[in-house]
Length: 436
Image 1 (cartoon, rainbow, N blue to C red):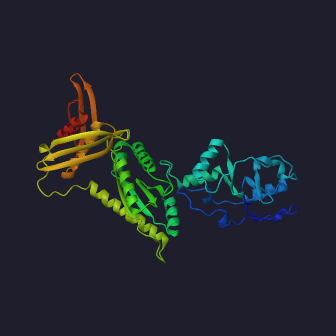
Image 2 (cartoon, rainbow, N blue to C red):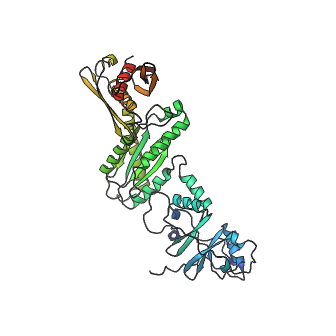
């Protein structure tokens, strides 16, 4: 292994004249931005690192002046060209100031790499109960990171609710890759009717929805190619280096995995809309403003998402007679196990038309089927249908299933004795409720 490059001193301390100690150190770019591509999460080298150090033969007096002058609680210790340990201010309490620091150097302290993520370092420090750690890169001392540094940065850059980075991380990531000539695609997500979760069921349920969606998104991204962030409110964004076609497939897979999810305390399922833009460029055109390019990618993906969302919630255009709910009949209703829940597919007949409703995920076969009925009816009706809950009760007459919902602004409900086929039961009862 080759020896590390000599560490250029940033200051000179004359033991006899401590007034000559520099008032500050110049932080150079190479000390905090070593070569290499950063992963999506913020890393130690993104923090302001100051390589303040002493030699083992320096006196305690010198170390204390440096710590107080720079407002730090620890120094690196360099012997020759090598990093040998650290010196913390608590190690010098009550020590004679004319004593060499060599007796107080912590040589067994664990150092971290500048490319370690802030979240990993934070968890490591908590797990090992250490208040600060040195940052070392191939034998070169770069500075000391304290728990306070990490808390400030993580609190500022990460959403405490979803544990996702905010949009600043997306801008950092996007600008870096555009500058490198990489193709960047933005996948924009926006929850449908999220305000209803907060208004109808309370903000605690709304928070559950955001966490559930964040977890679902997190399970689909790859840190080598993607960066996921909470963009704001009920919006999430993935920046990705995947090809456009692969990005489209990723978006569809995510939408399918989220639509129909439920949270405790809410009877309505989660649904989400998306937009995709970018991934067509092979290199940045000369003179192109990188920041403007990134803004355009985000804006266009957002517009596509909003257009899809508007199409989902807008009443369908009526070309003939309004839908006669009483004439709608059930053709088939199937609820099959899927990813720990149930996927519902319902086919209805309305005169000569066939209406199909699909719900990718629900917590029970009955709910999957009832939600799918509402989805099918919404294809043909200007009156919005929504299933709020499916309730099963044991009575003297047997097991009774009840479907409760909304038709436009009216509450609707219907009940009947359940059979051994909960999917068909729920579908027929939902049709009866909406026919009222």
